[in-house]
Image (cartoon, rainbow, N blue to C red):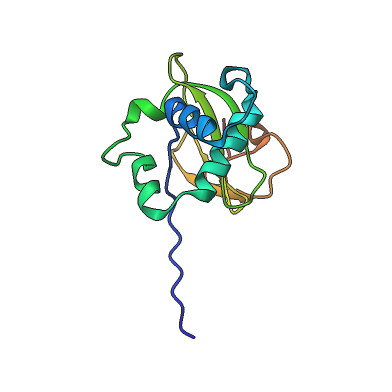
Length: 141
């Protein structure tokens, strides 16, 4: 077999309205507004896993239906439980930026603010702020 594997980082956005609709469709007794951050993330995972390819198109960041505003806001929670997926729960009604850590296949991208050099670290178990840039030896943030 000559298989081709293309690795590409793609963002999917599940809006609160979409999650509410899916929750209602599941027929759960618990009120949607009472779901914890972890429960919302689990719901989005379930929705993602059960979606067809054509259904996933509506969740693509920078696609036809999702805008930059849909992915910008205050970071509420993160999930890095799978090594090839990074999940963020954000509140778009509040100011904030995306997570500074994006771990895909357990690699963390780090940008040096002094010289602009970008490097990747695998399985980092300490605070990235304790690292020095391999190019200019400055502390990274």
